[in-house]
Figure (cartoon, rainbow, N blue to C red):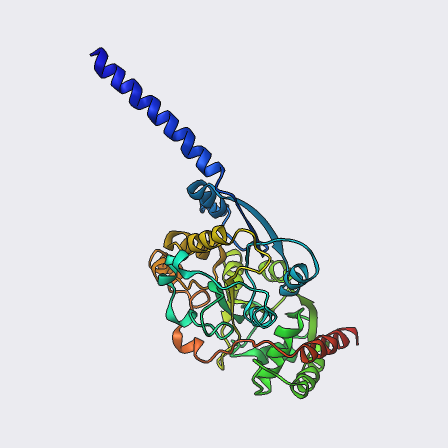
Length: 355
């Protein structure tokens, strides 16, 4: 019995030493510096998983997590400072720009085996046709949200944003790319790679709209629509789904001629000092259960086929979160505009707002 006890004690001691060394191993696993959009990951809200904590627990890698508000903020931070980030999440047009300027590292997909779960539509992205730099994170489309108590006629497309009966109750995107694109679509212009002439036409359309507007908004749209302070607004479909959860009087419209299909993808910038850890983080984010948790929280499109199977039918069947392939085939993706054209667009939008 003493012998058995001695053996048991040895096992316990060995187990303790193993746990200590395992703990040391995890403590020495290093770090990963993640730079993402604000409120763009499940962090334990609404009873969901805290994804960052789960990654740290599983890998022992410390996550240094910071956020930005726009693609341009991300670009300027990487271009004009000495920061070192390992994972960034730019949008499609910014990815094109960064690839062109040599700002991204090629990924070792052997370290990202969960890439196999990505739907083929979201591989070989327009911004990365050779599949070298990107793993899709989230995607979505732009759509209309409207208050059924204020909007008499069910909207069909962006034309509703020029409805004189809604004067003073209409909200509009407060960013040049989305606002100009909406105006272009009403004119039958493809917004994906526009010209200065296209911008001039869209600018005139936006000038026609301005007297009808309540205001230009971005995040303020949540308060305006969730509390029925405004009648109608364009915004990102996943966010519209969240607004509708807060106000039963809200409904949505996917423009019948299609809209902007946007996506953000995980990339590794050339300033990275922890590339292998970055690839571990990217791979973790595409574990089906992790991708599903992020989709539940964000209500943006999930590109992970196995994760979609884990979603409740309420989300799986919601076309705001997961529009049909038939609808997506009608949508366009923003290309990387020539810097001179993009600057011209911004200048014209500022002029319209100032008039």
